Image (cartoon, rainbow, N blue to C red):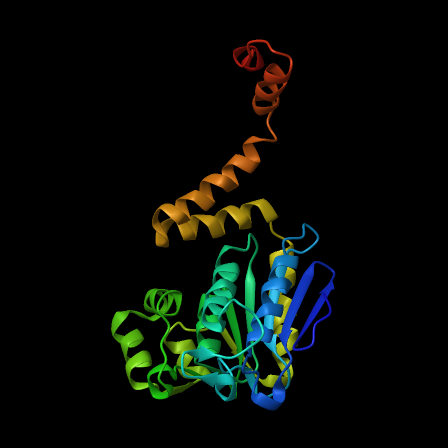
Length: 262
């Protein structure tokens, strides 16, 4: 797929997905979201160990949906999937991708952009970045992960403050409330992100996947437990016991599971 509104790069185990609409502070159209869904699907690649999610330029990570494309009933566009549904799809991809996703917060992370950075596994922000919500100010809100994950990150009182008042917070304030993991000068942002990526790449990919699923098991009920279970099932398929079960079925005989323990 050729991209028009995002950039996808893959190098040395790291995938980088960049929203490329700096002229609109990286606000997204329906088409942007469609491309992001495809890009995150491409990250289900064993050669990729960590994903960096960011925006083009120095001003914005992402500022949500492009309000100039919004009309009564939702955002206009050429796709059947509404932007707000696609937005939740990308959010779900970030949370369930079996490898860490780092938000490189290079400027404004506002509205839906704030939701995306919150649902990333880690967030590294430039000193000049500003973070916050805009939903109630522009007649919108996030009905799911953008509230629940935020509450778990900063506490329910602070999360309600962020949503109800729509204030902007500095990167340092975000760090102090547990909303980001690190704050560095903009000129050091890529160096810091690269350092975190390299540390992650040194770790066991399977352990990282299972840890991510374990977090989901705690927060997402049966759905989260299913991801954890399926992750364990994929490991089980690599055992002699699982292979014996398959072979016995194909060969129309009783499996000899106990013999494998001898």
